[in-house]
Image (cartoon, rainbow, N blue to C red; front, side):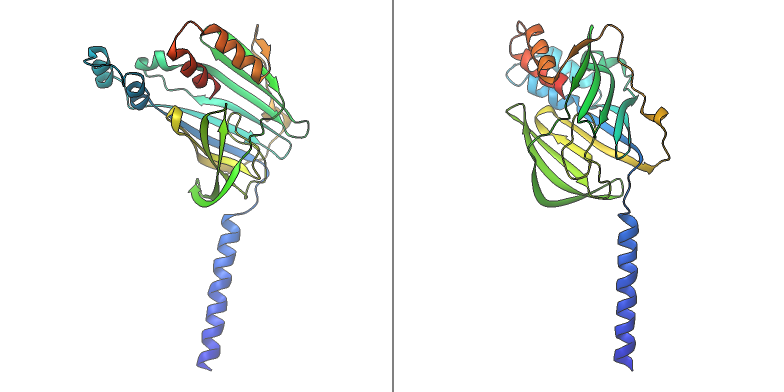
Length: 255
């Protein structure tokens, strides 16, 4: 009798664990995700000045600059489409030289394999219209908890040399994510770009009842219409006289 009761208790406990796991990983097809994009100013500054000696300007900047530039974004998504907008920009006055891109907004329509993005780079505004980005991802066996969701790790190489780590969740079976990061079996909730000293991680994931009004996207006035390749080429052309910093500036604007 004791053995039978123990067996029943074990089955009951396992059932509770299974129910809890299923609830935690409940499939979500509509919702809103808040992302925190964190850029390490100190690491970027150190990299730019690693060959300099006795640089008084560099030491002064280290003292005055905040350690990170932190911006918030919101992704509104359904199985059919998604929009991504700036929620809050870091307004620290010391960061004016680090605002490579402003006025970020983007719309993706999954059914038609289409995406549109507004990007303002200094005095130029672009409307980037293209198919959805589809990097060649390599899935790994590592997992991480992000905003209450179990996420699997994946890696890829972008623009020939930039190593990117992403974390996606099967609980949101929408092949999207922040900015141009997509192409995985579920929603991307985390991105790490070591070379650019940048991370993008979801801080809140909520279900929501959405209407077409939630997916409105407007292109900026007088925007230059390009695809992703045209955007990159124009940035490269505009910075070809900048020396070694030009290539890094282009990469910042691409990410």
